[in-house]
Image (cartoon, rainbow, N blue to C red; front, top):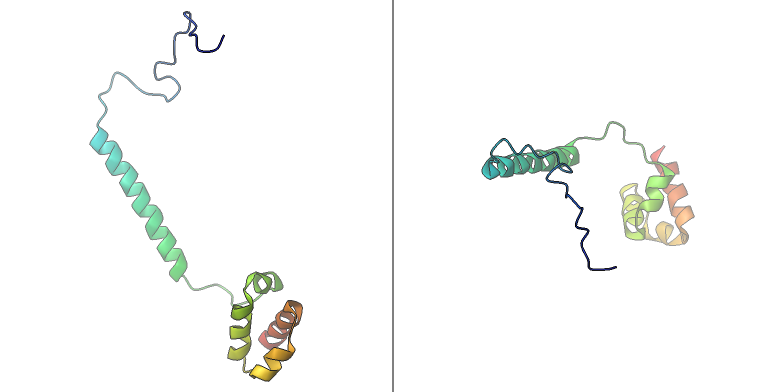
Length: 103
């Protein structure tokens, strides 16, 4: 039946979470540990964004993930004129041009 409790159920009494009931729990200490771990994660994320890439190699997969405007921006950085870029109507044409100019 739904909504009834098994009278023989003993419960987990903290066993599920491996809680040691003999030690007093210091909530402040636990919160500090969690905050410290979060700060470490944030610092690692920031460091990873500022690390210089090991190799400046553009792959076709990376280029296909870029938006059209980002692809056009790369093409202008390589020195193509607006007219030349406009002639590259399809994404595959733009990606091929970027790969060719990059090599």
